[in-house]
Length: 183
Image 1 (cartoon, rainbow, N blue to C red):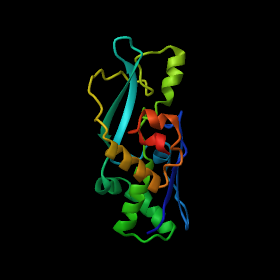
Image 2 (image 1 turned 90 degrees about the horizontal axis):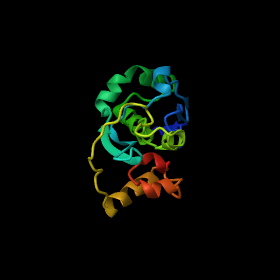
Image 3 (image 1 turned 60 degrees about the horizontal axis):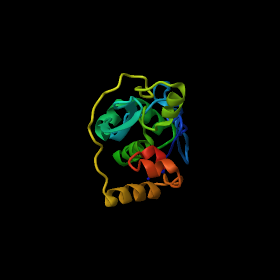
Image 4 (image 1 turned 45 degrees about the vertical axis):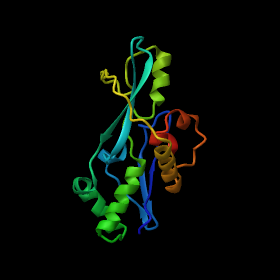
């Protein structure tokens, strides 16, 4: 186990503006510009919000699955990952690649997931837009119902992974499925 430390500097209320930093005890990864300031496209459940409904001011949240699983992700990112493994003298084996992927995945995000832009848009009087300024997908799909057991294990997992340092964040109480409030 290498012990990768993965950080995304973006945070609420502007999660999508940040940079990746990946470190090990051997040094810091050199992340290419095209990957440094955007999501890493790892597989997971994400959410997006928008204003909608009859009034145009009702907050809507949709949950969706996005990204690529480990096997495809490592092929897509093989060049920069292996260059960093070589430069930092990390063994080139599947366990180490998988450990890196899972650490990145734990911090990955999608634009429109943290709801931070909502308040700026509300103040600007711009209803029925998402923070990515794309046209809204008007839908009445309901988010999956949370069971107490599901929420408990999701929170416990984040705490054990060292991501639960802000559990007193009020946003967590409002939206227990949004991973990014749990950082």
